[in-house]
Image (cartoon, rainbow, N blue to C red; front, side):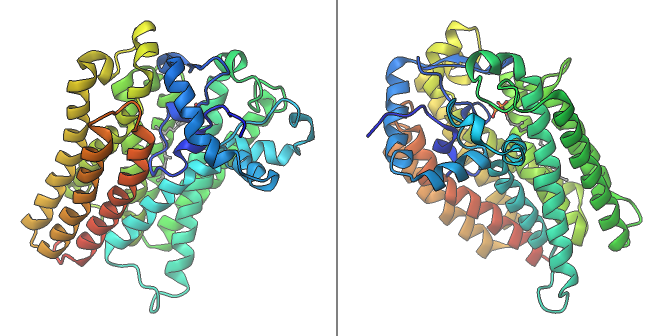
Length: 384
Ligand SMILES: C/C(=C\COP(=O)(O)OP(=O)(O)O)CCC[C@H](C)CCC[C@H](C)CCCC(C)C
């Protein structure tokens, strides 16, 4: 089975798209990301990553490989670049694979509103939630990914020349048309949804504006949040967990400050998940002066900080559920934390460098279900 570069598909199973993991390694096992996420991955880690994915990707047929490319989980090989139609390259640029967690977030928010009705609200509620999904996924996440690749184009030209922009298949004009088009469509949907729901205050439009500003600040100078490990990771976690939830909840119900804080708390658990991906690249991060948590504290301390963040903030949310009287949902959330702790004990704590992907694959589905459980609890609670 041929060894392949570690494509982003290693994280395809993950709820939160790890930002640096979306960049594949170069042949030499060197992954140099723009700004902060430049990292040299040790030869051993690179080889292990290759082995991890060779089983997943190596057996895929051409059709599946194409789907992976269009979803943004796999980069185009030099030879096939000529053959890929332009529309596919443009879709690839917007990385549809990264829309999934955002869609999930919107659904959680709709559930949390307690005001989404499949039957009585049909077809209005379903079509409005679909519109909100299009706003959050293809439009705003597509916009985010498109501009992110634009601002990464110089470093990508060195390390991943086959990406749509550095390969020359997508021009600056194409990027501008796609980014502006997605933004305009997104805002049109947000404004229409606010009007359709009779919102006195245009909550959805404000969330869309806020999301757009964060998207820009994440990728573009002078802010370039991604250049700062902590800020970038939290911005990513919060944007993928909290913002879509806010959108779904604001669409159908009321978004209170308390709910905003709870979802931001969940985002800290999301930050912990993102840190898991930093263990494999300690040597490179250290060499390039990047202060990831494992670099700052060493593997042993960092792994306990990571699990403490992931478990601690979920436990806080469970405690809050008990506090608002949703004890069954609180118990369900506790039940979903248990397999995550088991995966930490079995895989992550013994060897966070070797077992990061295995840990994410075993634990993340439970974290994601926990978010939905919390959403149902909020929807069920008469005071929220
Ligand atoms: C561009 C993002 C990740 C890519 O990061 P990285 O450059 O490290 O990886 P690549 O190598 O693959 O390029 C995601 C950035 C997310 C951003 C902080 C904000 C997202 C905004 C929301 C999607 C907007 C949702 C609004 C909605 C709910 C109304």
